[in-house]
Image (tube, rainbow, N blue to C red; front, top):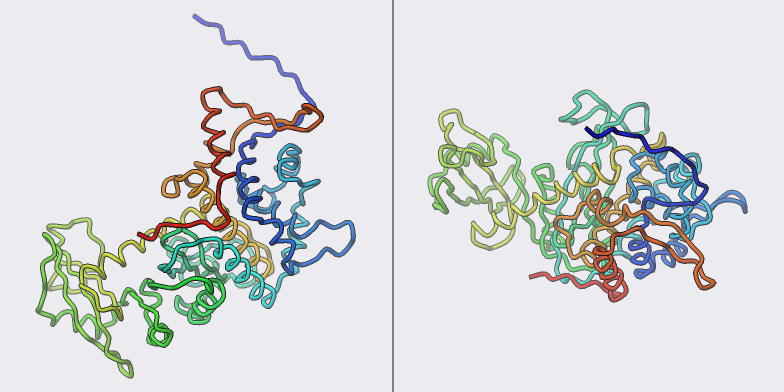
Length: 437
């Protein structure tokens, strides 16, 4: 048998980083000129000449997120990674208290002026033509006493305080177009029109909006009238109010699309509302046991129903198929929570929390752009996958030929792959063109 012997332990003063692959991302953000843009923003300034440059605080915050931090205290990990700081040209990285002071200087007015400007600048680099915007909301459970956290709709932690943010996603690019933090007791559709206005007119002012999609939380007469006044095409899931259920129950004309799936349409108006086109989907549970939808009628237990309202004159099946791809935004929310610390970067002040919340969205968009054009793998490479396969490379710096170089610990057979990534980043254009086929 083999005798297991523990290796002896020795210590070294040599600076080594476990994130040498982050040099890929550093070259990418240099390519899109992130530094120049951050330095031109009206970010809160330090109170003394010895304070950190605001742009360095933002980059350090993003760097903490990209390397796995999900709380401010976790960002202290990279404070002691001198090689990583050299890669990103940072003399020193902020502490937890520095982040708290920095974000504490944000307020409602600054957030409203700053973050749409950041989103628009970033999205101007994306050439895609007409875009589909998905609106959604989510719940972030809070523990402790934070401004705006209160008891509201919270399906996973009932009775717990929470925030209830609004989010807008660009379907084709898997990016966040806009995001607001809201108090936990806020209703699903509360302040949605103002959010949509900011999204369309400021965050996406350089883009053509082809389609707006949203779940039933956005099904209100005011929102529908707003979208129609702006001449926006929309498909919105319908909340099954009793009068709508009654109309569906008496509906007799159905068209079979496939085994167990039938479609129909009706024109319906609420009190003081205008007639609109409603698309109804009925699925037979016997044939489609895993189908989505709701069982609406006790005397028709074998069917599940879904319903959508739209102002587009397209075939029923096409409208249904166009809405179905909206489910991908739930994956974006899940990744933001799991890999970008969306639920955990929280401060006592509401506007400070929202500032970090909205900066996380920009950090996410940078990664989304990076994995699409540098890795050409935007569908499968989550942030956690990127960390394991691209960023987690041991590295150190050394002086060679009178200049400092970064030494990456990588097997010979993988070096060509990494060189190829560096080449792709070097060859990326100033504007990133997405196929909208």
